Image 1 (spheres, rainbow, N blue to C red):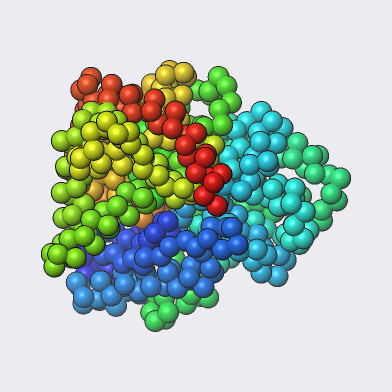
Image 2: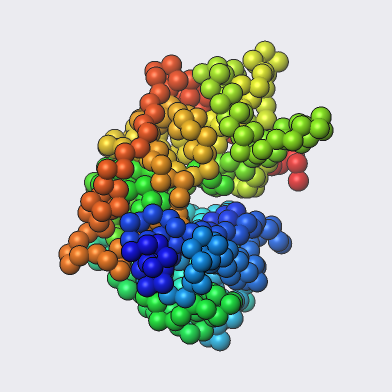
Length: 530
């Protein structure tokens, strides 16, 4: 069949992901190749001390990304998109969306980026003897209880952004296990919320006499491969404003961006890992066994099919780096030099490889928001140097690339050095790796491990979500997600591997020692620059 015939026959699969700065829709065919895409750029806003996106923009972004993808189909293949084989929705993990019994949002969406739940996270970690990060939905819920927020009594349902979209388009209050593991701890044996911890929490807040139980207000947990509902008539109209899209399309469980990143890099097997580096940065390593201790720097989440994963998540990665590149672009424009932004990134990133292995003594923190791993509550981007530091363009770019991975490195050192977690391969994906060889080389130095980037890595989360929808639609009886990806999707798809030499590894170690010492400077900036 031609691609046009596949589209007309509904032999396509759609993945849509809500990232931090972009909502993207990717349509794939039976060969798993993207055949059309569309996106919508957006930014979270800091309102009343809370990082949020409005409901209006959530829906506008969903509709625009779908519409642009459908227009791409029309322009390339001369077809009006009406039938799709399966759909999946994914989004930034964690956060807090709370609704009343009439399905009204009770408070503005609180995203993963907020670091306002410290007391709750600390208390729950102690209660469960299990790390509860500040971003997790249960931390947001308990912090609202501690704050005595009036809306808590009215809660009928809480979910994540992906869960919200799925619910609105299918009527199903469900969540993929990977995304659910960022709401509340999961028991890897039962593939559901940890029942003991659910009971502990309910006993802990029993004196409040809320008219709800925790289990009743959480989404139902589902696994990759299961069908999680159908696109309703109302949902089809919400997704496609033009009215062409037919309803009754099977929809797979909604997932978080961490899960789709694992799928997009074929990193769901034990001893594999991946690093997603964009606005935030996180590393996922599929574990062979439970960790010996509880670490506040390590989240325990799951793959979309329920395997235990050690996750190191840092709130900040490329945002401040992008701002500096924007400054250089403005400088060039002031001289009447028009530069292509992608070309500018390439030139400046490659320049970083010419720098001293330890960045010449320079130091920076790209903290646009708070950073949980280093205990910094609010963002204060900083660039610092000593009078004798080797201050040149190469080192300047190198230090901003290094610091983009600084907090991640601290968490990964716990997994690799203290817990002796074994990794056969690490795969990189996201904006940091767009310039070939640069971000990859620096990550290899940070982890002292080979880093692979596949050609498909640029497709990212929405492609990974489409693969999960395809798995639901076309998997053989008893076929695991690991086998499906390895034998069908990625068979013969070798990536490019970068390694770091001993000098580069030692250079990053020198930088990270400086980085840890300098946190006090960051704390002082927080104290005095209000």
